[in-house]
Image 1 (cartoon, helix red, strand yellow):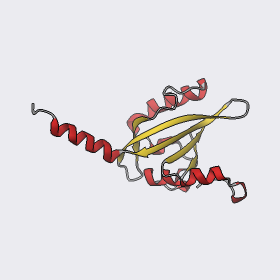
Image 2 (cartoon, one colour; image 1 turned 45 degrees about the vertical axis):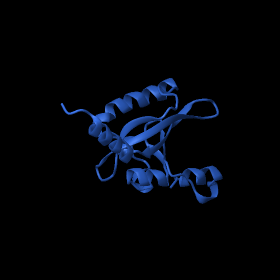
Image 3 (cartoon, helix red, strand yellow; image 1 turned 180 degrees about the vertical axis):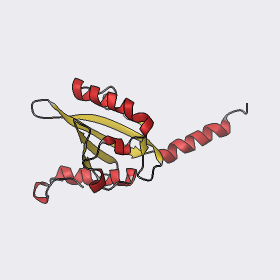
Length: 143
């Protein structure tokens, strides 16, 4: 759930909260400020546990250094390497299980076009990726 009060709740907030995909907003420092119901379902952390934490919460340790390099480059340069195109990456569930995540990113700007942070939309595609790997393995010639 958002950190907003009920008085400031908008239709946009309701849409973001109830969409099936994970919607995560992090400020310029990489601290989670928005964690919708979809993010709870995908990553297992409640909004209360996620909000205020860094994005490391959902990033496997071996990928964190590369993530932070890209995140800082986007915050400082005002542009994303993938231009909003979805990418397959790994995520971390609260249980410690590694997930395959299809994720797209966008920068959030203020009225003066200054970067405020980044929003990500993600879905768990672990089952699909594992089925595809199994199918490839089954059709690969034995070595």
